[in-house]
Image 1 (tube, one colour):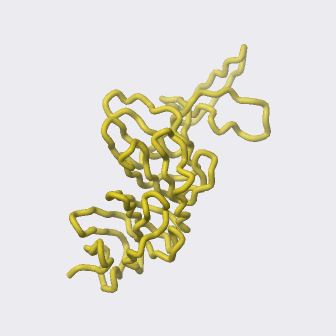
Image 2: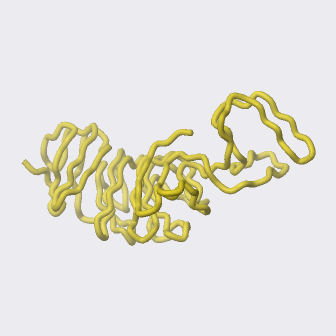
Image 3: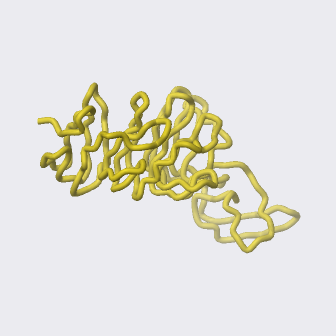
Length: 227
C-alpha cells in the first residue's frame, strides 16, 4: 500500500493514502462500488460461486478502502472506524487538539461533502460544517498553533482572501487572518514553528517582501521575512 503521511497524536496515527474501510457487498449497478475491498497488486483470475468471490493474482494483501486517509491506534495498529472517505490525495495533516484532524492535499470531497483541498474532521468523524477555506490549489503542509491553522502549498486564494502559497486561518471559521507573507515564485512545502517565528521551505524565490530562495524565517506578527 502507498503511504504519504504519518502524523501522531496521543494514541492515534493518521495515515495518508491507506486502503482501509468497512466491508460491503456489491450491488447490481452500472457504477463501481467505491467501498469494495481492494488488493495491493494485479488480479489475474476471478471466480464467483455461492455468493463468494475467489480472486487470484499478484497481490499479498486485500482489504477495504477509506479513500486517501485513515486513523490507526499508535500502539495496537487497530483501525479507527468511521473516518470519512477522502476523494483525492492527502499530503498533510495535523491534530486539532480535541480528537479531530485538519487535512490538506489535492482532494474535492470528504465524507460526501464538497471540500477543496482543506478540511477539518471532528472527533466524532464528521466533517466540520463551519470550516470551509476552499483553497484554489493543493495544500502541502499544515501546522496548528492555538486558534490558528497555518497552511502552505500552491494556492493563491484560501479562506475567502487572496493568499499566495502561505496563510493563517482561523481554527473555527476557516477564514484567513490578516497575516500575509505573500510568497512568490514557487510552492511552500515545509513549515516549522518556533516562538514567534515560522521557518518555511519550498520552491519560492520571494517571501515577506524580501528575496528569499527556497528557505526563510517569517515573523508571525508582521508576516515579514527576518534577516
